[in-house]
Length: 113
Length: 112
Image (cartoon, rainbow over all chains, first blue to last red; front, side, top):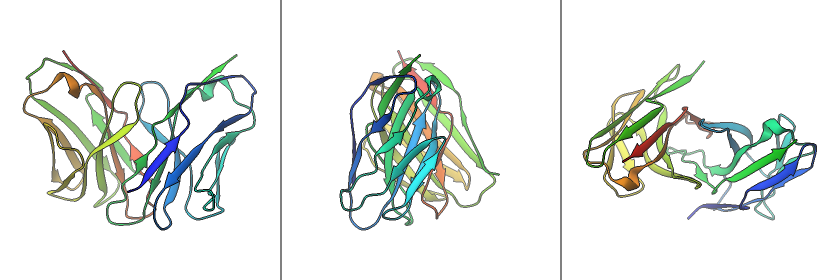
């Protein structure tokens, strides 16, 4: 079956540090890949996505590249801010009737001033 | 534009009591609908999904059930809550393509 594995948190960084959150997946075919962000007490928001190999998704300074050869979709940001503190979820989905998202376990990011 | 409403935001219920959480979507037709649960400090678990009215697929056997009485309404229910039902419940919808999902604000359920 499909699965998504992300690095366990929490990840604690100082403001303006470089961020990497690793995500690898196991799936057949060509899924779409996503990063979702969950701020405290809220639902999930789509942060970025990539729908085919070598695509780079980007939003709010965050980037992730769909690497089929390494089955990875690592999230990066060059300079984090305190407001980036949240839980980040990597996910995959197929464009079929169900469109179900398979999520990783989530990684909590804490950014200190 | 599409919006998703989920209520209530928080709920405290005694063990053995019934549950009804409601989710509605506006601005789209025939969406896929999902219920997820997030236990404290853990990831997201898909509970139910629906591709159409009256069509419910269960991913995890438990004492919860789901119904879709209207195209854009998805209800999560239980006849008798257990302590282990406590968690953060999230409703989501997606179109046929692209396969991304949009989430409601969630319901924090505490069973006491």
